[in-house]
Length: 476
Ligand SMILES: NC(=O)N[C@@H](CC(=O)O)C(=O)O
Ligand SMILES: [Zn+2]
Ligand SMILES: [Zn+2]
Image 1 (tube, protein in one colour):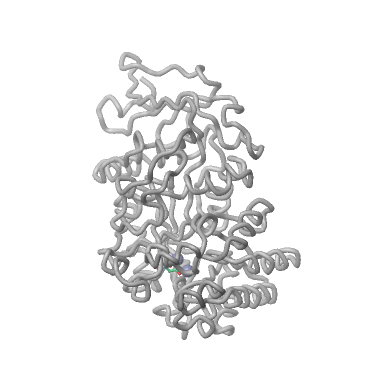
Image 2: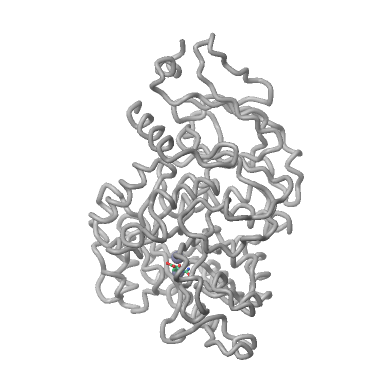
C-alpha cells in the first residue's frame, strides 16, 4: 500500500483521482487551433498534488486490490487548465447575505472552474480591518469550494476620506495584497498617492474602480446617442479614461503597482497602452460581459443589463477584444456582482448595478475570444489563471499542470452548446444577463487541492467540499 493511499483504506483521506486523456490548454498555443491538435495526457492526483503525468493511456487505474481508492475521470475531448483565479468577485458576506455568502459564491466559482477568488471589500462591515479580512478568509476555508483571498478597502468604510489599516491587513493571517474601494473610485489624488506608496512596501497593488464621481452623478448608462434617445442620464467614457490616466501617472511617480478594474472603453485601452509603453507598472482587467454585450441591450430597459461600468458601444467591445489579443489587457475578471430579485426586478432607474458572472465566464470567453481568434487556449489559461494569480500574489497556485504542483485545475468541454438556464447558476442570486442564451462549452470537473469541487458539471454538496478541505488540512 502506497503512502498516498495509506489513509484511503481507512476511509480517512481524499481519494486519488486519475484523469484520462485530457488536452492541456498550455499545449494549445495557436489561435483558432482545434483542441484535438494537442497530445492527450493522463494525470494522477494524490494528496492534493499532481503525482504523475504521462501520455494518454500510460497511467493505469489502480483497483481496490492494489490498495487504491481512485476516482477515474474520463477526459477525452476535454481541455485541462490550471484552476481559474478571479481577481474580482463580490461574495457579499458579511452584511449582504441575502445576495450571496462566501459559501454560495465560492460554489458558483467552482461551477465556473475557479479554484481561487479575490473577494471585494464592499461588504458590511467593509473589509477595512484585519478582523474582517481574517473572518472572510476563515469562511472561505470552512466552505472548501475555493481559496478565498480577501481584498482590503483602500479607505475606511470606502468613504474616500482616510486610509484604512492597510499595513495591519497586509500583516494579518489573511496576508492581503490587493486593496480596492471597488464600487467606488478612490477619487482624492493625495489619498491615492499615499495608498500606492504604502503598498509598495510589501509588493501590494491598488485595484482602482476608475470612475470620476462628478462626471457620472446620476448616470444610468453609457453616454452617447442612445442615452439621449432613451432619455437616460449618460456616463461618459472620459470619466473612466481620465482617472486611469491620472493614476498611471501617480503610479509612475511613486513606482507603485496599479491595477485597473473592469476596463470598458476603447479610449481606456489607448491610455493603458500609452502607460505601458512608458514603463508604468500597470495591469488591466476586462469582464466577460464587456467583451460580449453592448449598450443596445439597454433598449429593453431590462435591469439585468444594468452594470457598472455600463455596457458600451460595439466599437468599444471590438477594441477590448483586440486589446486582449495584443496584450494591453492582462486578465479577464468576472466582477461577479450578485443582487437580490427586489434590486433587479424593478424599474431601470431604481435597479442596482451588477451582474453575476462566475458560472458563465469560461463559455463567454470561449465565445468572445477563442472562437473569434483573439486568444488561444494557452492564452485563456494566462488570462484567467496565471496572470491574475501573479497580480494578486496568490501563493501556491500551480504554474502548470505538472508533477509536484498543487492540483488546482478545471476540465472544460469546448464541444457543443446549450441554453444557459437557471440550473447553471449555483450562487444565491440570478441576475445573469445570459439566461436563455445559447452558450458554447461547459465546465465538467473542477478540482481544488486534489479533491473534486465539481463533478459531472455539478458542484459537490457543500458538506463534501468542506470535509475534503478539512481532511487535506489535517494531512498536511
Ligand atoms: N459592477 C457592478 O455593477 N457592481 C458592483 C460594484 C462594482 O464592481 O463597481 C457591486 O458591488 O454590485
Ligand atoms: Zn467596480
Ligand atoms: Zn466590482
